[in-house]
Image 1 (cartoon, rainbow, N blue to C red):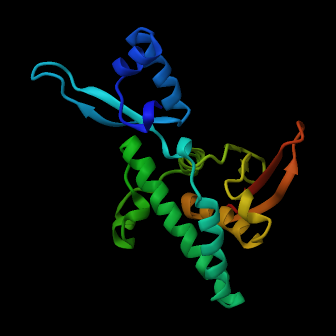
Image 2 (spheres, rainbow, N blue to C red):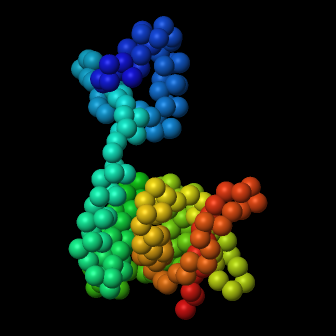
Image 3 (cartoon, rainbow, N blue to C red):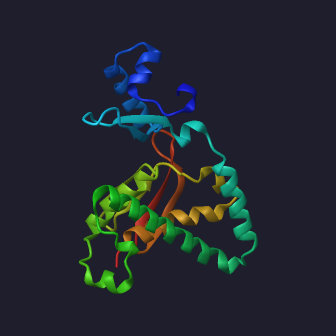
Length: 214
């Protein structure tokens, strides 16, 4: 974007020689694609509506999160015994689930059950399995898992069409456990991974998880 600073739709329209309506339209498309974001507002007059200001998103600017995550994971696993690996992965999955619940709950206005203490959760009505499945899929997809679920005669199944940790999983297979633990935290019951990066009919890999219905 223009010199990587905050700009309005009007300023974009002037530089690109298009109408403000067209500029807002294209900025909306870029925002939906995660390439720009609304970073502030500008009050142009005491009576007028504030003008939205856009800037490049973090994704469009690039980052080194993969290298940082790889280094942190190596330190985490190197300083833990084999028996401690699963405990630490469980804790990581729990924290991710709490963060996902907070973010999804803020967008949807839902109760943040994962954040509540055990006494508070006992006092609140538990959602049905179907409700929890839909909520889990929504939270997974907000984190780019490309997930969906199916009702099966034996037990529901959750399919993940994308692995957000693919860049780390090859060197650190422990990372694959996080998906299972994460789903268990979100849905509130045990899950078994029944397929790992199996190609579908189009040759695209997916992972499959089956709920262990109690």
